[in-house]
Length: 291
Ligand code: SIN
Image 1 (cartoon, rainbow, N blue to C red):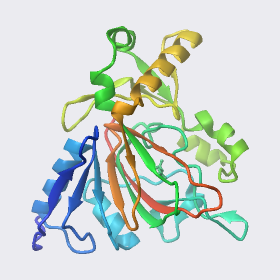
Image 2 (cartoon, rainbow, N blue to C red; image 1 turned 180 degrees about the vertical axis):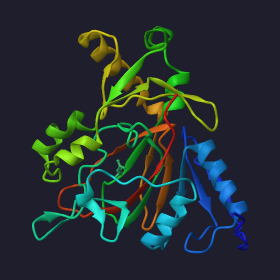
Image 3 (spheres, rainbow, N blue to C red; image 1 turned 135 degrees about the horizontal axis):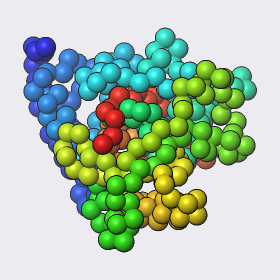
Image 4 (cartoon, protein in one colour; image 1 turned 90 degrees about the vertical axis):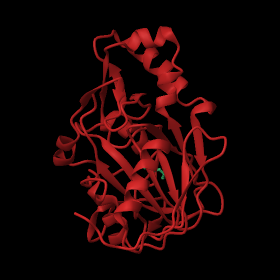
């Protein structure tokens, strides 16, 4: 469908000296988005893997509608933390109200790619800052194309043709023990997150670039290897993936909207001091089955 709206004067400014990321300037996402602008953002997302839109005073509906331009949205299994009236938005927050968490406070405490534990993991995620702490609260992104490109030959040989299991529950009990944010899951919720198997090296469906696709949070074992070999191989891949040369740290500003590509990256929430409030809204777009 062609959208007949005036296009805005946007610029894509890559982050200097960083292994990924660009800022998109001159765009107000509370206004209709012309097809021409959408195409440039889509291209920038593929090229830079993280695109940052500053100072976006958008409503949840506008956040959802912009996200939907890229594909159908996924609903997170933790329905407890959906934004009321907007199940497409997961609240990521350490805020407690009346003794109860209003959102998932420990989202992203281990490196991961969103929803890699699903048959069709997320294409991308859009995180919108609602309330930021005076210190901390950064998000780190690791470029998994670079991780593959620079992988030592011995590790390339070790992962050749191999797949790994991804499980939502991998670290759930550990997280539950150390934080107040993880509710007990119902049988219905557990049934929604059966373990899945994905290739360790995936091909980006739009650019054809290869990327490592294993994470500390959700990947539990390499299929067909003894437990100790599987653990050591995964650890070597995790360590290599997040070395400094592959990582960009996003320091949030008020009303930032950050859109990342889960097929190209892993991310990590660096953490917020307990006494400071942080509240974010997240949508996730459904992607393809990795190959
Ligand atoms: C996430 O893992 O999606 C949350 C990241 C963050 O809160 O910085």
